[in-house]
Length: 261
Image (cartoon, rainbow, N blue to C red):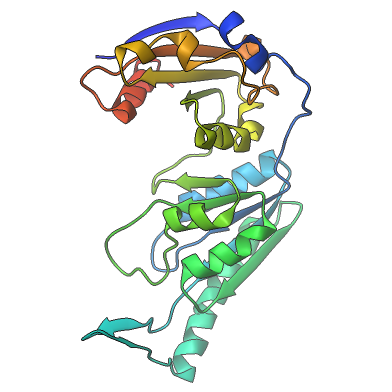
């Protein structure tokens, strides 16, 4: 059982939270990947709601690989699709794009991009056009020709990536939990999420130490950081503890459920 002690952000993270020198951050252009073979309507609705909230342009992208290369007997085999297959696939993508444009006609700008290639290659190349990339969770079953692996996108994009589960509702952003660890990767992830954190009514930083010595709040939240300088400290609470017999991830999830966030 995780032992957790909660304290209002004061001296331990004062300079970390209370600078307030950065202007409100936002997203100007978002990009959402659409699956061809699977229902991703809830992901689309999430992207539409976020683009509307941030008054951002929204780009829909979809890729479909026709007869992708495969290995047989140590030899990579490339199969050239027929012209009929290309026309049929393009028509299918156009139909998805037509529906997507209709759904996003209330936004300030909506765009649709497609390619007959592996989605992760296509999406990785197109991410340069957006400030936030919205993709689906990883799947290990079914037809993989139209899926964009979120891990590959995360490594290649150089942009913030929001991974949406199959079942997801529009984000309310009332209370946000940040699973905090004082590392370069975590600081960068929080920095990328600032547009969301600035709009939340309450932000809770949760740091779960891996040992007795690391469960101290002062060690989990050092005073010298400035990643959260754009968040007003009265809205930000810190919580530190140790995870006991649970994994770090399960400890954070358990804490979120106890706080009903």
